[in-house]
Image (cartoon, rainbow, N blue to C red; front, side):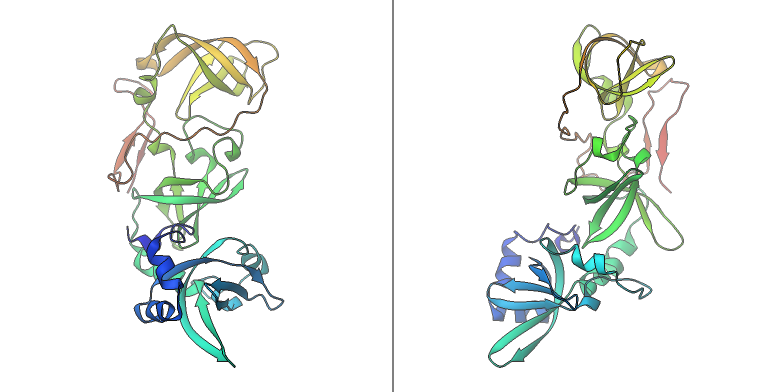
Length: 311
C-alpha cells in the first residue's frame, strides 16, 4: 500500500514527512508534488479553524477543510474539536502572507478525497489492510482505514470467542489489521478481524490435554462456563458457584476434541484482578497476505461449519 494512505499517525515520524515540514521550500515542494503530510493540531480557534506549527511556519486548516464528505454534508463541530492534540493528515493547498508572516493553508479534506478516490474506492471484500482503533462502542469499534476515513467493525467480527464489550479486546489508538467484510450501496465499508486470529486447529495446537493454563471467563450458561484460552478459542467447564464473566481463571485441560470442536476444562481457581489487554497474535503475515477469498474456522470433518466467504 502507498504509505500516504495509511491510518493517521503513520506518517508523522517518517523522515520524508519531517523533511517536507522543516522549511518553507519543503512546504512549497509538498504543494507542487501534492504530497500528503501529517502534523499535530495544536488548537482550534473560535471559528473552528485548526492551527499547526510547521517547524516555525504557521499552518491553518479552515473548518471546511477538516473533513471530506462525499455528499458535502455539513461538518459537525465535534469532528473539528476532536482533532486537537492528534496527528492530522493534510495536503498543502496554498499560502497566504500577512506582513512578514507566511501561513500555509492545509486541507485534510483534500487528502481524504484523494485517499477515497485512489485507495478506498479500489478495495474489495477480502482485502487485508492496516487500521487504527479510533472509537469504541458497545456494538463494535470504529477504525481508521486510511487518512482518517473510518469503518465499522461490529463486535461479532472482532473474534470468534464472544466478548461482552470491545474494550475486552482493544484500546483506542491500537494499531491492528482488518479485512474488508462488505461494501454497501452507499459505499460504506465494514471490516472484520477474526479471520486473522487463526482457525480452531491453529489455536488448539498451542495447547495440550493435561496442561493448566490461564483463561478468561466469557459467559456463564445453564449448561456450563465458557472460558477463553485465546481470542479465537474457548473451552467449556462445568458450572461452579461464584463465577462471573470477565473473571480470570486457571483451568485444567481435560481433553481436546477436534471432530466436535470442543475443549473440556476444569476450573482450578479464579480471581477478579483486572488484566490488561493482551497483544494480538495474527496467524497470517498481513504484510504478505493482502487478500483472503475464503476462511474456514472449523476443523475438517467437523459437522458444525464456521467460515467466511468474501465476494
